Amino acid sequence: MPASTRTKRPVRASRQQSSSADARRCEQWLMELTSLPTAAGKEQRVVAWITSWVKKRAKDLSLDHDTFGNLLITQQRDRRARTHVAPVWFQAHLDHPAFVVRDISVDGDRRALALEFRGGVHNPYFENAKLEIVDSNDRSHRATITSLDADAKPFKVVTARLATASADVRVGDVGRWLFPRPAVRKGLTHTHACDDLAAVAAALCALDRVRSKPACEHVGLLFTRAEEVGFLGTIGAARSGTLSDDARIICIENSRSFAESPIGAGPILRVGDRRSVFTPELTNRIGDLLLAHQKLHPEFRFQRKLMAGGSCEATAFASYGYRSTCVCLPLGNYHNMEDIDGVLAGARPAKVGREFVSIADFHGLIAMLEIIAHDLDSSEIPPTREVMETIWKDLRFVLGEPA
Image (tube, rainbow, N blue to C red):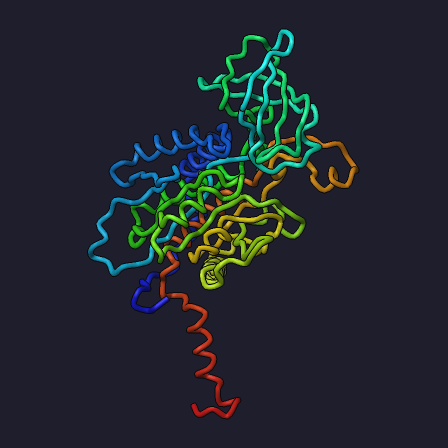
């Protein structure tokens, strides 16, 4: 980044040391958001929650929608006195793999539902699974899957039988796996949809902290729709120019944890996915910031990993020419599938379960976003190119070059 656009600011004190009241509030938002029923194209409950959140901060924040229903939250601060700084967008998606009712028929004294599954879950997990159908009045109705058409297009289709004859279910209602109430156990939050609503919660917490801080007015939030069926909201936003060409996009995800990316070892700076590596300039810059912060605050923990188990919206944005990278939480029971490897190997029966993430990792992710917001444009930590030039200046004599 040209020196003229960088702002000289010291690396801040540890942002993990937030007040206990603030930490509890963030955890409350985490539990509320990850409990909401949502599906690709049916994200209205999450949208309503965010809309209410922004209204309470209407003096400082504004909420807009693009053509595709993606949400953009920006700060209402006077930027005229400041040299232009390329905007930073923290991005997360609003949907989670789930069912949508497409047809209703009579099955004896009960009604049978045909539901399409919008997302990626392996076939064995559907067998005889228990569902919760949430109607337009937010009432829950139980059902059991009786069959699966795994070859249906564009989405798998299941048939499910409602538990009661009087259920007020309509075409378009959202269905999800039937789980117990969310709970926190041994530092882990077990809930319906960490992917990606835990990221939404972290982004909101981070913005809430930096919206009154100097030199952070260029930071905004972008929440996209229908990620689970092919990044549709992101592709629409990228194709239509929802964001300016100079935007820097920090995608926030929940990525399946592996042995080399354990839950509880800190949030992850994700350098790539199974399709691509992300924008090196942006990824490396964030890595330098996090390492510098960690030297001053050893309690701050983070990981730097490829996370090749799936694809991320950072790849989609980069394919349209945007500078983008990703940070994520290591996730347990990815897409609500327990012991994926054991099930695919035939070693155990398939069972759905609540997703889970570490509460400490969640707070670490918020701190990570704050560091990025404050210090991405700081000149205290030089860009990699400047480091290379310094090395060249000091040691070029080794190659016979004049000093």
